[in-house]
Length: 36
Image (tube, rainbow, N blue to C red; front, side):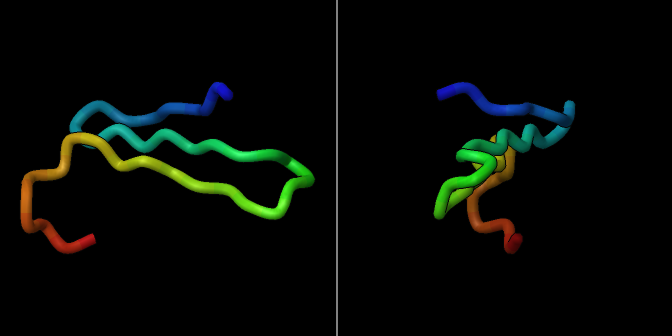
């Protein structure tokens, strides 16, 4: 399953199905303990 990625400092990758029951995202590059 491929996703869409955007960002340079933090990278947000979204995934899921357009007509499915669930979607999700991954936020990469955040330092430990940072509140989102």
